[in-house]
Image 1 (tube, protein in one colour):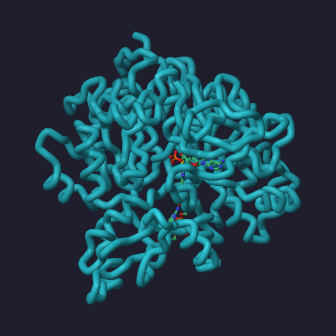
Image 2: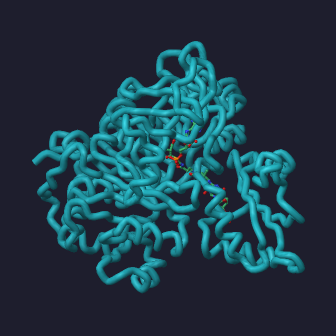
Image 3: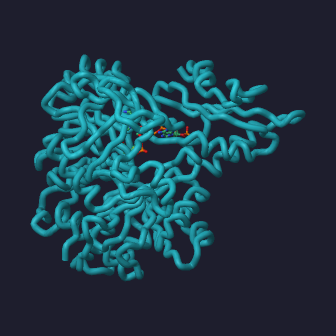
Length: 502
Ligand code: MCA
Ligand code: AMP
């Protein structure tokens, strides 16, 4: 039975005794054992009643078992829906309800509360930071033989939620073909082969750490050093065993802030890749001066996987994200008219190709607003193409903050703040931060004659918003700066407070 992702990434013939990953303690897991683990999980999910097309929401710590769940979903034809472990129960509720998830795998700490909140039609399993839990117990009782579900290229493989400018997150529908085309293109472009060892310290609930990192590894039959999270000491200790690192800019600034990170430590490394947020040209330059390596910066989105990359062999140009991938078309358009602009002019970046998603789950209108009938996706990023064809990201048309590679939409936080007692209105902006690139700063204006309790609001934010979205500081103003049309001038707030965390 055909199943594009399985056939290309996991099928028999690829189940060798080669190491697929080693954990932080150096314990190896072979390709064969990874397949067995995933097959047992797939059979467990099927035995629990899940059928192809069902969505499985997963909010668990990063472990080999958690990654195997992605492979298990591919095998069983289930749509994988990974979720940031920082999300609160309130946030989780939304994703589970919106996606109509048939089952959830969560950490044991929230099992009881999640069961109480979810309808009885939703099965709840647990998987902890050691790979144990009710899911593993059920999986251990299953066979490791698997009847792989038939899937077509156009069938959904994953649903990844991305926040929106309106404050409501949208589920990006990604097909087998979307994920596979990107995996193959990137593995080839970045010269991955079976001798590569990827130092994997990214979370596996986003495109970067899940699809870019793991699908490329699987494509090349390479291996990974699989760390639960970014940990500077572990990175420095394990770097000598790796050949490639993929990271967000915060990884690179943190490494550079440690003097043990030097030329000798990385002399053997083949490649450093950066993405998810702008890499400052100065970081690129400092990195080269310190290590002799030029970071390869690339650009992508949840909706498009990767679209643009600096070259492997050619010049990796600081401050640019490189060229459109071989199978991706890119154009720069006028923000108002959508007409293509001349080379060099800044405008909306639009991309089209096999990497581009199918639309937002259950939101045809939002899909129509961002995905043109001709297949071009309107990214919301402003860019220009220089005289040599390098794409430069110069800004964002969307009101978005990227903190440590995580996206935060101010609207979601403003909606929360506006509901708090004695708050008349609010504005949330991103300002420069030495570690996270940007940090969240929130401003509120009190209702006349009242004094909002800032500490109580911060406390409430803890329960409602994931930690990374919570304002680093809440500032009360007499009024928000507005232009003559009455529109809040966020640029002016950013300007006035740009040194707040520096
Ligand atoms: C943690 N905190 C954060 C962030 N991460 N706050 C803001 N922004 C963040 N990104 C909070 C913690 O909860 C903690 O709160 C405090 O900040 C300090 O945490 P720390 O221990 O320093 O953080 P960490 O655990 O070391 O994590 C920082 C990190 C991590 C390594 C940068 O956030 C990370 O791995 N980011 C990568 C995200 C990613 O994969 N993005 C790709 C998505 P408290 O002070 O209360 O303890 S975008 C994507 O996939 C597209 C397609 C693409 O192009 O790649
Ligand atoms: P997400 O919605 O989480 O997939 O994040 C995608 C967004 O991250 C893009 O729309 C860009 O704004 C940003 N992004 C990703 N890679 C880069 C990069 N190399 N430089 C600048 N911004 C980036």
